[in-house]
Amino acid sequence: MSGLSPSKDSEILQLESRRKIYDLVKEFSGCNFHELERRTSIAPTTLQYHLHYLTKHGLITLQKDGNKIRYFIQHLQPEDKRLLVFLRQQNIRHLLLFILTHKTCRQKDLVEFLQLSPSTISLYLSRLIASKVLQTVTKGKELSYQLAIVEDDLVTLLITYKASFFDQLVDQTIEMWNFK
Image (cartoon, rainbow, N blue to C red; front, top):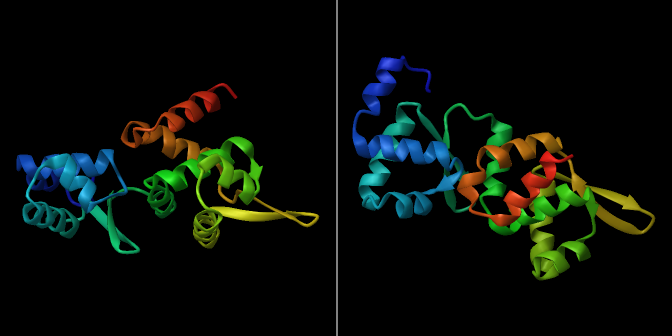
């Protein structure tokens, strides 16, 4: 689990509420405080205390994402954490799924598929490009977008955390991917 001895980890997780929080962070890695609060029904101050305790003892890590703090299980690779931050956001997750299944696409295709404004899509694309998740491809005068990461890495995360997304589009994409 952490870098501590197994007996120390089990001692830290002996308290039922702390174990529940740890298990949720493990299942919903990349979730934020409010998601954990909803899922645990634990008072915010108590939840905050246990999250701090688990972080201090190296069982979980936290990462700032704008004005949110996201919690991860300790053993996740930095690349997986970076991707999970995006996958926890439904619109960005759907954008990535669209590109995953279509290989390349234009902003216009994403606007049409996601039913969002061009400026919102542009913001998402900029964030994904800045994080090196997407890259641009120019064909003539037309600008397209494609994954800059290994497709299998994205699919592995989608499969691993499939149940935590509660998303039919994820289920359909994974099913389609399994037939390739």
